[in-house]
Amino acid sequence: MTELNKASGTKVTQGQEMTNNSQVTNNSQVTNNSRTENHQSQSDNTLSRRKRTASNHEDITALLDEMLHEDTYDRRIRPNIGGKPVKVQVGLWVIALDSINVIDMDFKMDFFLRQLWVDPRLAHMQNKTFTISNRILEKIWIPDTYFVNSKESKFHKVTLENKLLEIGTDGGVHFNSRVTVKPSCHMDLRMFPNDVQKCNLDIESYSYNEGEVILVWEERKDGGLAIPLRNLPQHNISETLTMQLRTEYMSGNWSGIRAVITIKRKMGYFLVHVYSPSALIVVLSWISFCIPLESTAARVTLGITSVLTTTTILNILNNSMPKVSYVKAIDWYLICCFLFVFAVLVEYTIVLYLDNIGQRKRKKKELQKKLEIEEKKKNEAKRPFSNNNEPKKKSTYAKIRKEGDVATYVHGDTKPKKKLRDRIKEYLHRLTVRDIDELSRIFFPLTFMLFNAIYWIAFLS
Image (cartoon, rainbow, N blue to C red; front, top):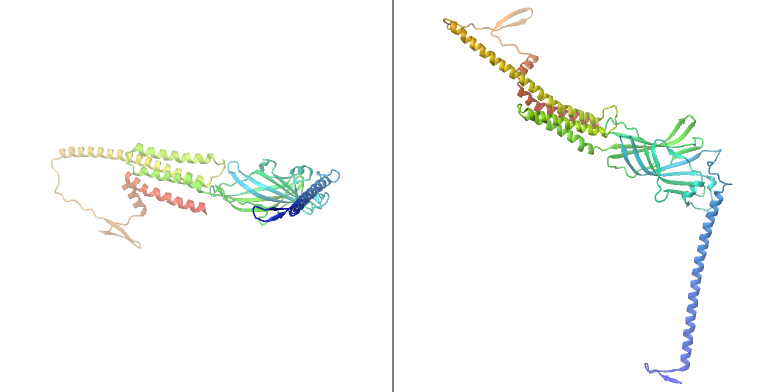
């Protein structure tokens, strides 16, 4: 039976149509079967991987249970008990170093503390180093290291305790923790603020002597102490040094390590806030030499204000410094600035005093001169006549010239040269009060410049 295909105009028999339908059905069944087989194979692989992971986890759990069992591991006993001392390698990675306090003489450090040692009881056959939770720290032996010269120490616990524990195949233990320490640092402030301080951080075992535990620095290029950030706001870390320590106590000898950090102070803050204002106050006090001598109120007010300002700067600085028994370099500068300002006030006091004496002498001379004139007029009035035509006697100058043992008098010879001492006396007698102010305008600046040159050469060298 045939039918006419309207679309193509071809004839299709009923048998051919049935054959085609059966082929399509068979192909779809084959495709579905293959997809089912692939899905089953993938699920089988996932299950196998999960089983292997679960078996690994079970192996590590079983391994830890076996290693840390009370019958085989005692955390109260150090490794190699009765044998060689445990060698603990220590390394520091400094995150921050700040709060260098000159009053309390301490500083603050935040760092990662690395400790590495070998515990044969923790050796395993996993062929890799695995990291475990820090809660297991309560079940294994850990060296009781502490910071000898620390005032305060703490572990970080946000969000959990910042501790890391790794165990190697040979029993090597890597214990890492984040610690903040405030060590004491004895500071010599004689050259402050151009001082260089050497601050130490000492680490020892608290209960194990050198026969039980030996502390050494980790073998690294930086010597076991890494400080990436060396440029601080007010200081520079110029040098670091690591060394071994051996401390003798009444109960024995202890092994330890020391980190020496060289800290150099920056002077920028003190140049701007202390040195420059003090020098400007000294220069400002020299305006007093340009004020007329009669303006007593202005000159005294300027001098006293300069003295009080310098004293205030000195007190503010000393309030932020420790009460030491020696004089610091910055104290020398401020004290000398105070003396310069005080000397300006003393100079005006001397000038004013001399001017008052001079005024009294001038008044006395004027009064005496008036009396002499009046007395002379009285004497002339009493004389009947005066001998004005008598020739006046000419005074001659005689000089003794020594030639050998003979002394001769030479008339009309030149006057002898005066000695330097006599010249100075004559100059001082001719010196007026106003000349002192004029000389001070030159003397004080030159003296202050000379002081600064000597101070900064000695201070910076």
